[in-house]
Image (cartoon, rainbow, N blue to C red; front, side, top):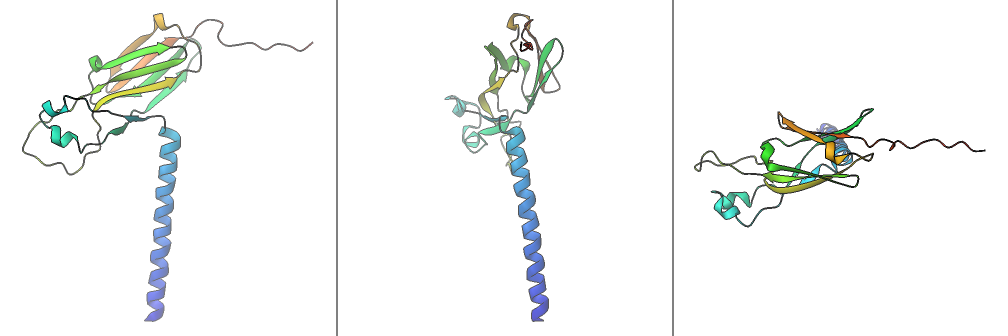
Length: 168
């Protein structure tokens, strides 16, 4: 009997160790891949007038705005996931080699007589800055929004690729 209890304890310890290792691996990957995508959503002073001010206080203040930066021969293409937003709520600015995305994700409750059991979505004003790998022509930039993904096409400035200098 005592041996079977010891074996059960060993098995439980092993499984807890595996679980902790998987959880740690998941957090490490999340932080390494999405650390820059972790975005703070701040509440505005009018949140009490949104029809659920008390509930908003318990909602997350941090959320992921996952993105990618892709370089082609002619362009830098930035795509950022901003689900639950309207394109009118997004502002894009470019300064030096930084693309700044800001806006507001608005809270809208369909019914006032319900209870939340899971709330992982953040609401409020946000700002996300993405470094660009090359100089771009901000005047010729184009943005589109489809299926919750904001895509920004930024033409590269000619001559920004650098050159190899031979040593004589």
